[in-house]
Length: 357
Image (tube, rainbow, N blue to C red; front, side, top):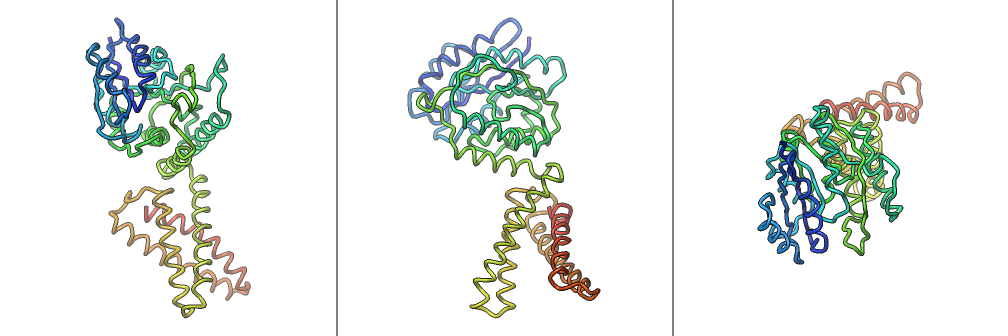
């Protein structure tokens, strides 16, 4: 017999919770010792009372409460750290997924082939309820973008069904930070970073409408894009990192030029250049932390900042020497500056990647 723990985050799901848990309990048989952890995330309807009644009737159900709503990611962190099963999975309380399909997801884990199994809604065509086109395309786009950064070839990153070996999720869970639906790209990035053996299994899916209680929205989609970059960019393939740094550098260059244009008529030339360059460099540092590299990965916060300042100084000196040297060799100032800027782009990226961060 194996022990399977399913974590059910719940927020205002009084219409579906009892039916969902009833289906989950069908997993309990002679082969599966089931543990169900319902995390009530500050529900304002009757969800908590329903969960209490279910826990009173079924000893395999554990109820954990959040005093205030914190978000799906926060509820999952609570439940994942509480779970004791050899295999730990996730079950939404909205009844969109069929819990009995977890038996299929268990197979690659029991065979010793996988560390994590994703239940994919897109692996096979079948009879399905047709709903929102753009919601589906957003899921596919986010999965594609996630794959570009994690180098995993999965088909459904945003799926609820993720099943882990206990030792894998116990190591990952304390590192999780996202409180809402950013959990999905974050945990996927950490799985890729840990180089887990990932399998996918086709599952069925019966989506509900927003009128029926669906909660995810376009803001969560934007947050997911940020999470994909923030948690995955530091280990993304080198071409992806260069592309990201190009846009960071381009934005900072626009900032530098705009600030200089605004300040040059107010301050002396040297001061205007210095202020504009310093603020653009500070923006570059902030964007590198938020999007591309891991903050304090190589140094302490102070050490990292000092390394960044030294790196900026080094590249400023190289830019000056390259421009002056090419000009001395007979190249015009503008072509020389363009060449030095190209060299500076590569140099700045290499300094940040291998020295600063």
